[in-house]
Length: 353
Image (cartoon, rainbow, N blue to C red; front, side):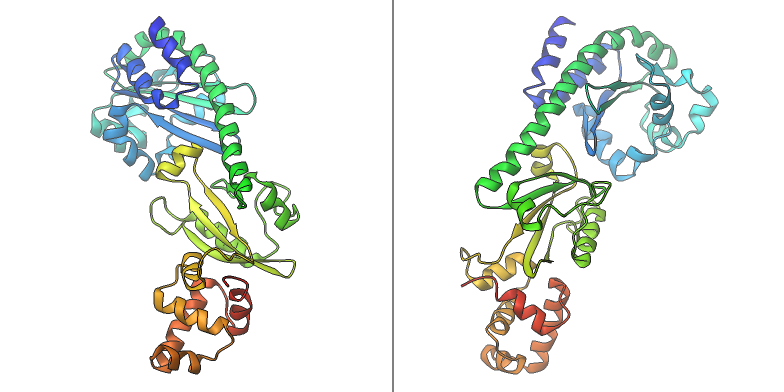
């Protein structure tokens, strides 16, 4: 046990160790696997042991069990300073009828579980779950071992959360040093961190009383909310849209925190980066494609319109029918969020040489 406790503290600075540590804890009590859900304010992450990650993690998240697992509320309400097992709250018949068991765990031969809620040093809450114990009797027998690990998990994971927040701030401040205005927004729309350039562009007026991002440009706020609601991995969360602020227009890139970017921030949500007027580093057609996800043909048309040319003139220059140019312009309106050509031209003329 002492070697495993040493690894728990090592994982504070080497978070890649957590899955292996969780697997060893599960093995020590004869369970299938172990996981933890760690929340600090709006930040949250879910880490599972390798067996759980391989065989059930994706389905658990995709089917929405993170928010509708009936086993979690009683543990939160009681806040017992140790591990609890299912019979502490329900009869065996009640457990078998719970959707999480009936529809998810029992079909995978995961018969019993143990869990504990740990309050961190500030606003950190850690829910530790041990899944796939053979029976209720073995689950109860596992509690003393799990309780011995509990205080070490609490200390290590609380410190790990503080280090993660510091790392997140470091990344955003690093973007500031590179000349990029950026912020991280949680899945609920709360502004988690932002750098000085981001705050300066909005004059600090970017949140409501609850800390949720609320641009003065209502259309931009709606676009951000839509990106946050997009299903994970759908690609819809990754988008670009214009933001009008104090007579200026910038373009916001929403980058979903998934895959390696999620590992960097250890959370969900999006990174919002601003492309501001005066960017001269990318040729205009390529910049338009990058900012608004335009097709090559749409970008060429938009570039010509930004020069003050008419749709008819643009069609002639491009060697296409006017009807084709108008169809492409309609698509450009949809992607950029503008509804009038004059507004589109005014916004696009601020980018590129």
